[in-house]
Structure formats: C-alpha cells, structure tokens
Amino acid sequence: MGMLGSHRIFQTHELEEGSRFARQIWEHNKPSMLNGPYGLHWNQVELHKSSLAYIKHDCALDLIAQGPLSDHFRIFFHDNGSIEHAVNGQLAVSDRDNVVAHVPGVDLKLDIRPFELLLVSLRGDFVRDALTLRFGRLPDLDTWVGALPKSPCVDALESMARWFCQELERPGSPLAGTGKPRFHAERMLLATFIECLAQSIPQNGEVASELGEYQVRRAEEWIAQHATEAIGVEEIANAVGVGVRSLQRTFQRVRGYSPLKATQLHRLSRTREALLQATPDAATVTSIASEFGFFELGRFVQQYRAHFGENPSETLSRRDM
Image (cartoon, rainbow, N blue to C red; front, top):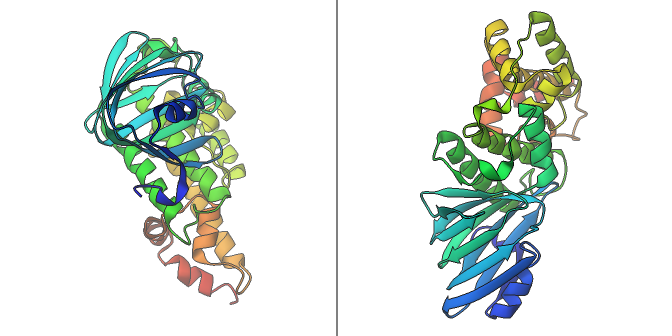
C-alpha cells in the first residue's frame, strides 16, 4: 500500500476521474496521455495547516494546470520517477536527487513520468506569516521559489516529513491522534521549510537590527510564557520586534546558544515540573513529554538526562516523595 497506506483517499484507472480529483488541487487542469495504462493511487493525511500525501502515478502524461491555484505551498520528494515542472515558464525537474516547490498563484505545465512521491503541502497563510515574521519584506515568491538547492536543510525537511508519516501510522504514537504533539510536529515542518527558503532568498529580504542583553531577557520571558505552544523562532523575533537573523546572532553572542535552544531548555524545565506534579496512574513520561513538544522519546530522554542528570522515569517515580 506504500507510505500512509492506511490513509488511502483515492484511486482510479480512469483518466477523466483522475482529472476531476486533481481539480481539488490544481483547479484548472488538462491532462494529455502519452502512454498507459492510466493509474493514480493517493494516500493523504490532513493536519491542521498542512497535509502529507503519498502518490503513485502509473503512466506518463502532460498536465497543464493554470492558475489561480489553491493557496498552498507544495514540496515534491520522489522515491522514483520524475516530473518536469514549467513554473511561470522556468523549467525544473523533481526526481530522487532534486526537490521542487510550488508556490500559490503560478501557472504550471507538468511533464509527468510514472512516479512514487511524498507531497508535503503547507497552507499559504501559514508560510507567508512565517516568512513575513522572518524577513520583514519579500520579493515576489515566484521569482525565487522553485527548485530547492540540495542542502542539509532540504535533507532534514524530507527526513522529518517521512518520519512524520511513519509516526502517523504507528499505533500508540503521540502524533497518531489530534492534539499538541501534532501542532508541534507541524510547526517543525514549517520552520524547516522556512530555513530551506532562507538559503535562496535574495539578500535584500531582511533589514537587520541588533539586540541587547535586555531584549534577550525579554525574549526569554516570552518563551517561558509560551513554552507549551507550537512556537518557532519567527514568533519569538516578532514578540521582541526584531529580525530573525538579529535574534539568532545576539542570542549566540549573549547566551552562547540559539533562541530555539532557549525554547528547548524552558520546555525541559516545564516538563520536569509536570513530571514531579503528575498524579499517580494519570500520566506517563511519553504523554507529558509530548505535551511540551518532545515526541521523539529516545532523543528526549537523552536531552533530559544530559540536563538534569537522571532519566525522566526516575523523576516521575519521585512524584509521591
């Protein structure tokens, strides 16, 4: 059944039926078969402001999808096959070695070969709000978003998305149900995508300003107040009223670590408080940790032990003492 196999939402071997389904994503599309037989299999999970889909396409075809497109950013991660994307006339190829992103409101022509891929979709306002907080002012997105240059950040985005899919399928995973863990994971996807875009944004995107130690303390106070929420560096910078790069530089200078590290330290402290205050038989390490955005239990245990000198299970066992 492939990735997200228990979340099959559509399959067909009829071209017209597949075209009608595609109109939910590319409202105006016209497919033209090159060879067959036609086959489309689509697994998908809807999150809060994003979705993850695993798609298997069995034949080659041309697809013209003209705007306005639905208001989503979409990133293509292939397991096999390829798609040639003409985005506002600029060519890019997505395959196992190349990642392409679509932005809302562009005209597309897709030359599709048989493929299997993971499609990450992020709601337009979700991305634009983060970009505005991060950079202040932006050039037109369609002038600099297309093929994503190969980088550790792009690799991390793909790895995170695939891990997210596995967790959505795993019984007992904190991400398998709705709630805070999903919000935290979704926010991590967004933050990593913004980092990928930051590597290719024109240099006039942000007006830099410097922070002082007082403003770092203000940022830390805001982090402490919002530690249980799905926040990223963009929200922290906005709360202080500076650019993200300025926030990162000054945190490193004043504290010796990043604002995201500061967020992690606050969350670790809050998690410890919750473990010590937990009522008997009403909570587990996993359930408490996931409420604070720690849903990779092994990594959380390592971080907790390094910071407090004991395992979280040991802390939980002392709650009645």
